Image (cartoon, rainbow, N blue to C red; front, side):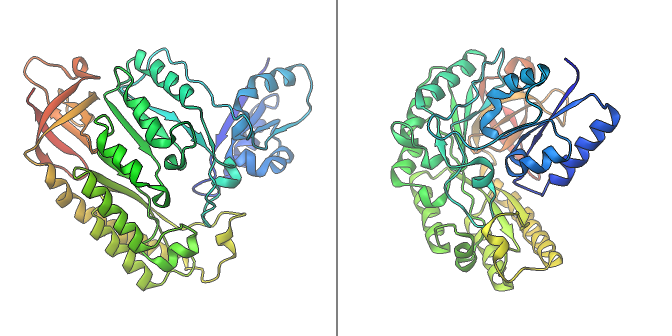
Length: 397
């Protein structure tokens, strides 16, 4: 009995430990009887610290399904304090989704952890070694989602293309695409060093796999990529992009980028700017490098001053913002299949969905059609306008 506060935490972006500690203190001050549970990556990395700061229970990412039992034990007065961490590698369990209803597009984890140890990244410490989920379990979960109304299955993993289940990742794509009722399959994230020709062929061959590839590059400079431990050069990445485009001409690329990594010179940064223009990314997540305790990059020399990191990020983002509308013009005048997700946030009476390349399109439905009635259907929309990050169109069938 009594109140329980569960704080679920992530340590991948900014250092959130202080936020978590102040949230624990606030909760305890406002309600002395409350029990505070901290779950997720900060719990994994900082277990003992969090207990000493007043958390009652600390649960790392591999232990979510033990949470109910641990709370019950707390009710019975045992254990006084508990840290559930460490990684379950022999028989990793994944939480099973059993939805009563599903959105049109649903996320489905296929693996956890990562074996790459990029020098800036805390994931291997926070999430542990890479473990793949058995394909039959993934397919069964996808079928449950489809039975509840999902039409698009979005496969998630730290590095999906190194998926180790039966048939590898190409085999998994085949199986998920074959489920009756699945009209679209997407996935993220792909690591450039593991993007095999057989995977490129599978993506291009399976009609349900959408022509959109999130392929994080992180830097356009080979020197910086080497310091990041990414396992490929600038040239190899560009060559890979060409191979994907040759097999899959309609593909849209998106990426992740880090600027201001230790040792990054102005010249390195200009190579990143050049790579972004050259690939023509239709979407980009970009960040200033920020130090993560326990990662190898913390020991690298050549730290870039914060204001230069910020200034480079601004330059990169403004350049990218300026090129995106021109890239999106390739869709103008085209009739594209749109999977409808709901009503447009912008204008009453218009519907919203995504084209195969994952861009949002707001469109005018056919006379007599309401956006609500179209949800979950794939309709044909002629694109008539490019707006900053989205497209606009009119339904033609």
